[in-house]
Image (cartoon, rainbow, N blue to C red; front, side, top):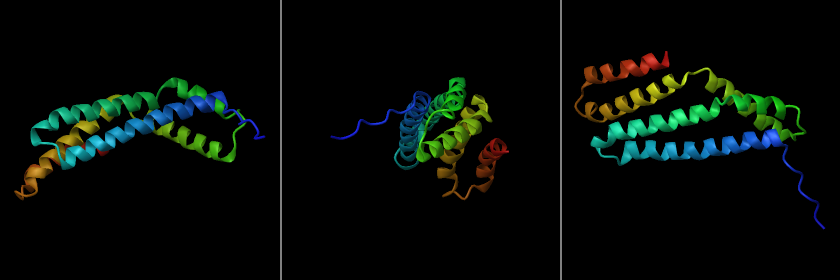
Length: 144
């Protein structure tokens, strides 16, 4: 007879559900970014950039939900194994990093990087470094 599985503590379970959802959304984001770089026709860039910004702001909202802070605090008191404790530390680190950025910055960053990357596709073959510099400035401003 096999022993019954040990139930996952509730706060930790809530955190892993949110992060599983974030993982799936990140997967979609990666596919959309790959398609933007590899297959998307040039006329689709504005719509794709808006869609990527929407995904980024949705993911940011999930990452910064105040309930996560409560679940993180409760999960620290739950009986977790070593792997779960390590995962909890990464979840908390992700929460702190996400809360350091306002949602508007997250959205603007996606929009300016998409615009820059799209413009670069035409500027590089044309050796248009001045045009590239103009598109890169907002990306550098976002990084700062």
